[in-house]
Length: 326
Image (cartoon, rainbow, N blue to C red; front, side, top):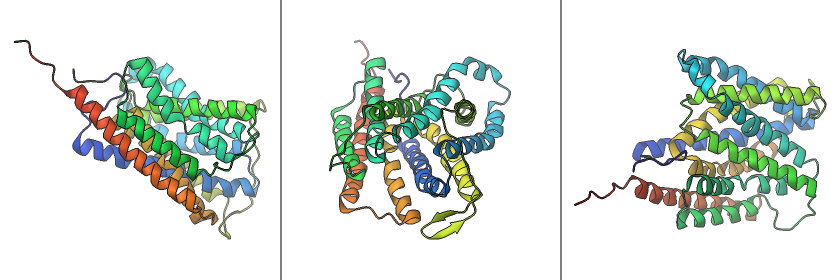
């Protein structure tokens, strides 16, 4: 017994584990950059829908040629995995972002993010119920520690009035986030990470464009400068940064990390995106985290480490040879 269905610390040891963690952190940093960079555009007069569409569209344009080349003419892989690519684009790319932006129309950003980032817990539950992969006690403990850390990082301990409609949209974003990690971590489709990322970004971009055309997602833009910590930059600079780093790099590295680490561990390492978002907000927007947020950041990192230890225990059990009958 040497494999785990769909979520695999299967043979994930040594340099592969270390490399996966590095790649997962690159993905989290790239995703975390989007909030602070996008904020400058939003303050300049861009709508969230327009920023998201340009971000995903540019990412698709960058990754698509590489994704096509990575197939090496094996178009049957794409045909066979068409449903997976569509699900990834609809849920993991467009769905998560659209639901999140819809949520913050009805509730504050902090509570919306808190609900969305229960996605890693949803991944653990899904892998347990769907594939019988019961988490270890360390995984449960790490999830609890990281959850407490997120509450502090997002500064929602004071309590706020929450809209039911906003909560439902935020839960939709959570489903999209969980789907992103589960689909990214699947080895069944055989698609190279570049090809899956390209297909998902194309599908997500098309869907966001359609939502804009029918009026469900407002699309407004401007050529006014974006301002970061008192410094003005041309409007196209943050758009390029979003397209290259927060879309192309983020999604490709996210898929590769999930395949190396498995969906559960990758999803918890992805929690460091919140820390990255706070750090970039400090550097670019001069929004300095408070003491509670910094303490929460330490707890998130501690939770990720504990989850990693728990996943190693699961891998050891899975990879243990079955006894040979005497």
